[in-house]
Length: 141
Image (cartoon, rainbow, N blue to C red; front, side, top):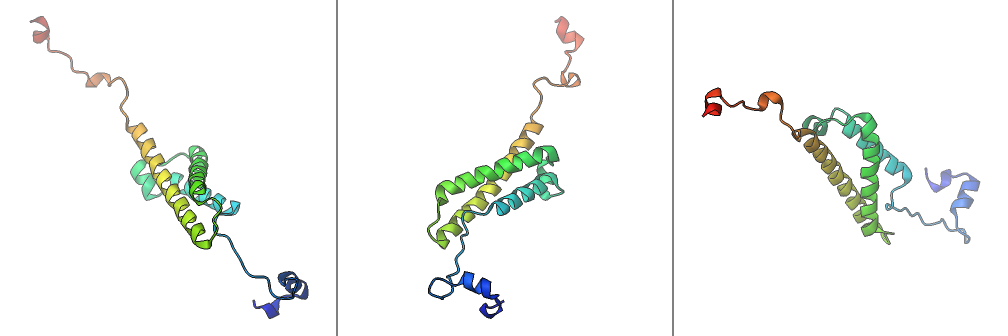
């Protein structure tokens, strides 16, 4: 769709006060809420789905996956926002987005590892059949 394909109203809206087309600009950082929601949905799928991560560390029940995914995404966003802030250039926005992506991945891995470690942690009391009874001869001595 080129400039000739615009309706007259759209062409007038796209043109500046002097009749020149308005310069195109976009911002890569911060991500839109729609993008952040998509990240959360993907995290939920990763945590609760049939993924290599779930096979290695165990799947998270869907009821637990959603709040965990939201927390992971929010913490990653906050960490990247501190560094990225209001990116003044596209390059700074790209750096902030890369940091956000790395933080999401790191926090996801930390979460599944800690959950797996907590599940593998032995109970405070060993099972009864794991306790060795002393032989009767040694007890009498």
